[in-house]
Amino acid sequence: MPHLSAPNSPHPKGLPLAAASSSLTPGGGRLLVAQGVVGAVSFSLLLAGSNAITPLMPIYRTMLGFTPLSMSLTFVSYVGVMTVTLLVLSRPSMMKRSGFLLLGALLLAAAADAMLGVAAEPFVLTGRAMSGVAGGLGTGAAAALVVTSLGHAGRSVSATGNLVGAIVGTVFAQACVAIYAEEAVHWTYILHAIACIAAAGALTIVLIACRTANRELLSIVNPALPRSTTGLRSTLMPLAVGCMAWCTLSTSLVYLPTYFAETRLPQAQTFGTIAMLTLSAAAQLGSPWAARRLPWASGLPTMALGIAGILAGARLGWDVLAIAGSALTGAGLGASHRLGLVMFTKGTPPADHGALSSFYAATTYLIAGLSVLGSGMLGSVLGLEGSVLTTFAVLGTAAAGLAWKAPRLRDSHG
Image (cartoon, rainbow, N blue to C red; front, side):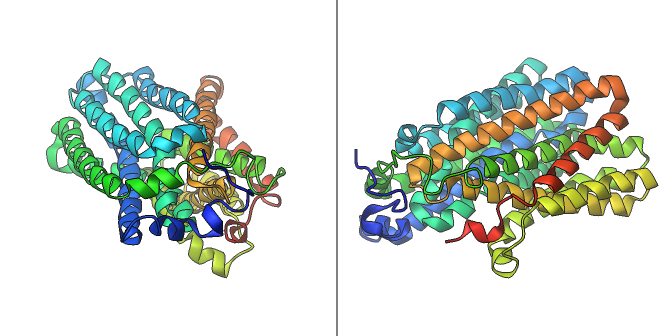
């Protein structure tokens, strides 16, 4: 197995990854770009399927009598098995077969759709667990393929797929509800399964075309991990920032709509989480642009300010302030999560990038799951409003406190 001669040279003979890989096959540049696009779309598609359940929950509750425990189990069954799968795959040696892993993830996601489309509680829980395995298989594999194909630019692309997928899945499922009403619990997953199978077909074609470049570049690993830079700022801090961002997002999606309903903010209940997800994705996609104009910025101060806006809006009964706070929170957490992942994997060859992406995702999902569970347990003592107020106050204070040591947008380049 070839190794790197130096941690700062994650490619043969010091060439950029994309240039090195394009030199391995005739016409490799265009084919690798196509592979990068298909890999990124495939990952977003996996996340779209896992997030499609959110608009369907009211229908499950009406049709199947889902209790709050049943609803929480749909979250736990997904996150639990996904975390285990991500940890198993958080080794560079596993990423040598990234193409097969991502292809298997798409096919397993289609099988999960078949289970979810039955719309019976045991099938829903089983399908959610299968979706978790699919997400775990695809996260690091897609990241490794995108970096193999697009080089350094692929690190930014692979860091945006999660929230893009979340928005696409939520909007798609909501559209199905509008068109099919209760039948959306079937058609949402039928259509998603068709999309997964189509993506698997496209992925198979580009994997065959790029097999030589993939074989060469995915065999390169850096045995001297941690990565090209060392120390708290380059290892633990990006991971902590990512965990904080994902805790805030997960807690918001689980509790904010009900919190806004109890505080009598109907507009915030309808549009708050939509604004949060939309601004999260926009911040991720716009981070390269912002890095050139606001190189000193990080997402944590924005996230802290947004949380303050949410709590103030709820306290004052101002829908507009609560929605604006949700949007600011989304922008801050989106930029923070992306920046944390880019810094955590910076300077690594594709296989290491994929393995570290799996570890980053496993850690952020695990901590987010514990945060949601802790908020729920706190709610049994303080009630929903007290639990949300306490949880968000802690998250906002922690974000403001860590902002001065957090990575900056300028750190993600060079």
